[in-house]
Image (cartoon, rainbow, N blue to C red; front, side):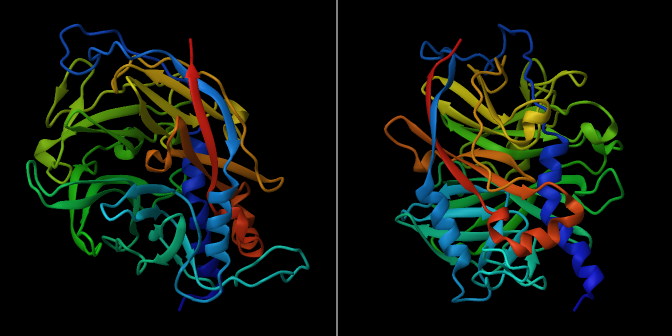
Amino acid sequence: MPDDAARARQRTGTGIALALTLVLGAVLVTGLPDDPDDDGREPDGADCRPRTVASWTADDTLTAEFARYGDDAGRTDDWTGGDGTHSVRLPDGRLLWLFSDTYLGGVHRPPNPVGESYAWRDTTAPLVRNSAVLMRDGRLEATLPAPLFPDPAPDRWRWPVAARVEPRSPGSSEQVVRVLLWVRTAGQPPWIYGVPTATEVATLSLPGLRLESVVTVHDQRQVTDPSRRVLFGTTLVAEDGRTYVFGGDDGRPAARPASHAYAARVPEGGLADPAAWEFWTGSAWQTRARPRPVLGDGRDTGVGSAFSVVRDDGTYVLFTMATGARGLTTVASYWACSPAGPWHGPAHEFTPALPRAGTAAYNPQTHPELSDDGRLVLSYDVNWLETSGAAVMLSRNVSLYRPRFVTVRLGPGR
């Protein structure tokens, strides 16, 4: 059992995903020149047209459901708060929610120890690096044994990102869940959230969601400069028999003003096969190649690593936090006709609600499996801005470390 000081240091992990996004949060997108010989960058798409956010509203129902489940004191080993919010629809209709750093344990009703009217958790509440929660018919039901993905080594951990259900292998009739994992290793400043190490793919069985295997698909340990290491999986889009997987580097901690975004693609059923991955090299999709940026110039423009991409008819739409100080509060959108760009924007921006002063929004993620009738459900995570006081604040007010949701409608852009 760690002592209080060690436990407090561990609690700062709840700010890791926030730090990652805030440090890399300044976002402005630039495109690369068209390549007429490319086989996948600019597909024929008469439906591709500029898209932007036409309107948005708070989705209080989904936000309240996570508050209800997190505040339920009936169990002491389930989810009470987390970030890195991703989701995937299972064949039986259940929705699997994946989280990075997660608080488990019980939640107490207000008032809290300082007299505030917020539900609170003990400062000794367990913190794990990842978790998964099941939802059925809009109601959260259970937390899988956590962490779902064990640490691969001491001082090294796994954060789950995007996931999809796909054939066990190309052409197979058996389906499994593939989960992209970011592997990070404890490091010294400026790598306060860990040194990027590798991208892995986990395979979960269906319907039992048993962890079968974890495979490294993009090992970055041989890249000497950690700021140039690329982790894939912040978002993915399935289209025309392929899965397009987006990722980013951590350029900003090395004093560059912005990081870059990258794209890879894999045949359906091949996410767990390292040999099946093709990376955009700036002119073509190639296996066993060094990926080249699809967004950002490394000087004045770039993209934070926590962003999301969705396909709207023939157009790819990207959501991320806005540039500058607005990156703590404001979501921007961009569009392209191909995963490799060129990307256009920023388009319309919007500012979702925050629970109180001193908090920030980050990690906007789309959830197409919850979207219908032209509306798109988007989540954003919330955290306390000052990392030195995060452990106390997140314990004193449990609502500060849970996802919130909005409903977005897209319209014509320019």
